[in-house]
Length: 146
Image 1: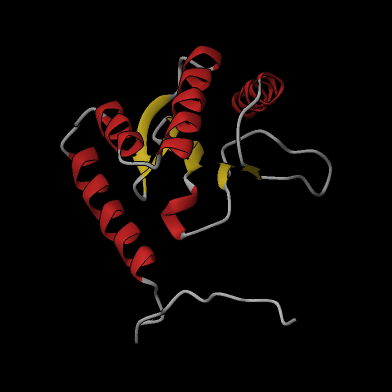
Image 2: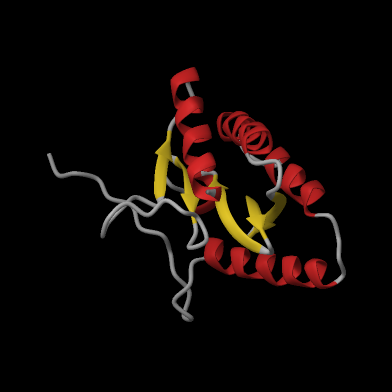
């Protein structure tokens, strides 16, 4: 039996509807940043809109980041919960529904100090968070902020 594949419908511009929505969210975020608005309220609102399984993970990740790296600023980044240092995103949570993916993602950006030789992971798939997984997330965040 042939394996069933799915494709995301792209528009004439080459971007999916989800990608276009993320770009619009980013433009709105930049405007709020220029106005000096608090990003944590936006982060919590983005989390509240997620499907339950992703929402539970995002809430836990947010709590872990706040406890592990209280100096990071909560905000959104392309509509996703994110945490920044000196205005630069260090890590973010992408719910599975955001781009119709099979799993949520905990990702790290360039400012994250996860360097390990010439090659290292910068994103991690999340299906659920166990106590052991939460410890791994905390250790990654701690290392990322140096």
